[in-house]
Amino acid sequence: MIPRVHKQGNRTIGLLSYLYGPGTHEEHIDPHLVASFDGAAPDPGRDAAATLKDLQLLLDQPVQALEKELRPDKHVWHCSVRAAPVDRILSDQEWGEIARRVVAATGIDDGDGAGCRWAAVRHADDHVHIIATLAREDGHMPNHHRSGKRAQAECRLIEAEYGLTAVNAGDGTAAKRPTSAERHKAERQRRTQTPREELRESVRRAVAGAATEQEFFDRLAAAGLLVRTRTAPSGDLLGYTVALPGDRNGQGEPVFYSGSKLAPDLSLPRIRERLAPETKEPLAAGWGEGDTVRSGPTSPASARRAATSPAWDAALLLDDQGDDGAAAAQLSATGELLDALAKTSAASTRDELRQAARAFERASRSHIRAQHAQARALRKAAREIVYAGPSLGRGEDGAATAMVLSTLLFVVVAAVRWHAQHQHAQQAAAARQAANHLRAAYRTTAHAPLTELRHRGRRLPRTTRARYETNVHTVLPDLAETVLAEGGWDALAATLNDAARAGSDPASLLREAADQRELHSADSVSDVLVWRIRRLADLPVHGPQTTAASVPAATTRTARPVSPGNHRRTGRTSH
View 1 (tube, rainbow, N blue to C red):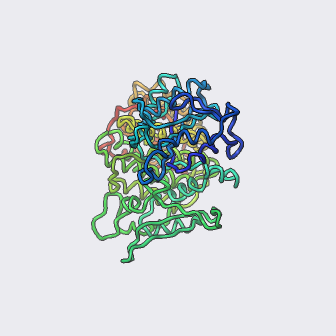
View 2: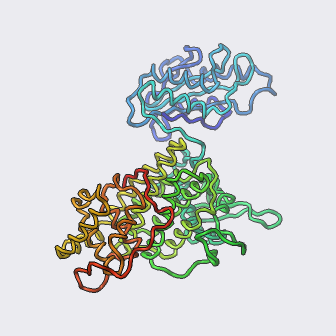
View 3: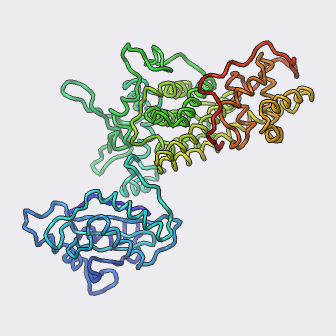
């Protein structure tokens, strides 16, 4: 159940006319009162003798009784309360009781017999509107400070008592939702998103991996947005606003939004916190000298492969539940990496990755202040992906994308746990939603490269496969039967064979991959091991170009040692 306290107004009759009217799209059906301050207010919807003016005069009477100079400029308080689409249809009596509880919780009518006058109007099955005038019967002003928060808290109780859908509590860090006027305008213009939502995504993509303010503003211009900047008399840049070229107001002028109106973390000061330092001071790990300008060209596949290491580090840091500021920075940078991938994704995964990025946008913000210097490597990876250009989604591009998506799944699931640990209910729910979209994108992307690997694995000689089966039994005694029974075992055998032919020790690589994190909760243990080993050994999906099907039992090169922090983790991860 979602309550929304709207902006205060100064015309009671105007709001009543809307509530009892047909609505902007004829959506108001049978408007009528379900409750009022005294239970006997005139109802223009059900009583033919009652008028809107009668109800307005009754509600406004305490305001009009005040001396003119004591009357509040905006005395009309308005709150809508909406049930979830899947909830049962509540009766008028139930909505009336809900309205009484909301006005009591918000301080509009605290039950002392001298509260504000109010009325609750229902014109749809799923919600009710409460209108009140902000002058108590005793001539004092009501204490309705933070009425929105108080209404939210009461609605959490109402949900539990009425058996309604439980809504996650907010913390004030969510992006502002489009207004009803913005939504209706988008419908008229046949837009799939409101301009506010479209601008928010465009600005977030422009931020993704940007190293300097100039680079950020250049990206905004390249995206086709109209950009205005605000400067101080000294010439220092203070802020910016953006608009869509085709979005105009009634006067034919572009409708501009400031970054802070799009999302709390898109204001210029908050964006500056993310940018790489432009001084000659030593830069944070993962962001080298010269990284304030674009690095050399790279391919989409290599950019995605390079992103897996900092993404993996982010997952480990989130699971450590240690430095909250560093963890918040990794979450923010993960959002940038998702934006970069969505911007450059192949058509086959574009929609799922864009939805994953949209969902994770909510999970990337909290009240914990991010120490952005701790996430330079991940931001740099996002930047390289942007400049590497679009992925074809096949061949090594597809394999590298599957590899980074497999790693990002661990990051996002770790984000779910981190937010849950900090009681960030909305952020945890958003991360879960992002994980669902990532899984769908991963399955689409991984299908072709894993199919190729499985085909190669099935063609290996029996003695070669037997040797790798022995490796699995030795390294993973508890999971060996599971791995060998999975459809992905053939792909893992091919991967171990590729590693051996490249000069690495398959058993050592398998042990290092297994020690990085627990595997029991993975949807496919063999798939996870395939991508871990291919990342550790930097193996292309197509493998060495030689035609030998088997390799010597002994190899000349061993896997690199396990790095600190790559020890076995015990947190559970659903992949």
